[in-house]
Image (cartoon, rainbow, N blue to C red; front, side, top):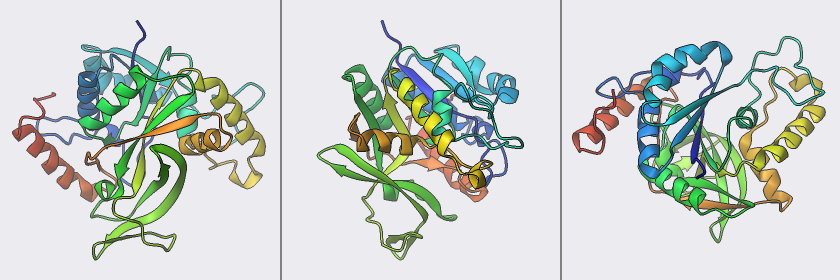
Length: 295
């Protein structure tokens, strides 16, 4: 029987928050966000987790979450380092910034053997997101991918602006994902740097994707093309983004991406000031009986 794998992107440092968001206690019993993610994923049917981590942080990550996760799921690790590149490419001298979410997923190609979901380590997505993702992956057909879509109004913070991929959806299929920056709520309206108001119920991508293992070959090809075309002035900071990769598959008609709508509320610590509100929301979920003590 094929494993249903959850790929957790955990190599980011969270520069605006000021540290490793992934290991910041937020729940009433010292829980961290990944505790909730893994609990919800297990209930939805995921039986294996792969953590993408910086090689130098793997042991710390194992102590904080990996060993605990291994009590109820199969656990593997995929290191993400800037010098892990396709054959024929070398890392530009002085580059320290990771190559982006697309590269993070590609780094897991040797430890994934079946359908898999992708999430960020530092985002709380809600149980419904995992249920919808698992159901799709259990029944997926070749060439079919998926993305869990959140109402934009459920993904905002009161403490600053956010960047979100705003999706154009038709007949339940993803057409495009366009990055919008400076998104904030003003007088009951959502505004952004791009100028136009964004509908409250616009579909936002929060980096919850579902793939089959066959995607890795195509991803490697596109990452190599990205590196070949990377201008010299972007050599230190250019990133290979997962939504851009998926956008290319759609544009070239190589894949169909189902949008799985969820009404779940996203929580995350984009700014240090977000911590109090997220902790209060998690405490309320525990008090309602939605979650047991996870630590």
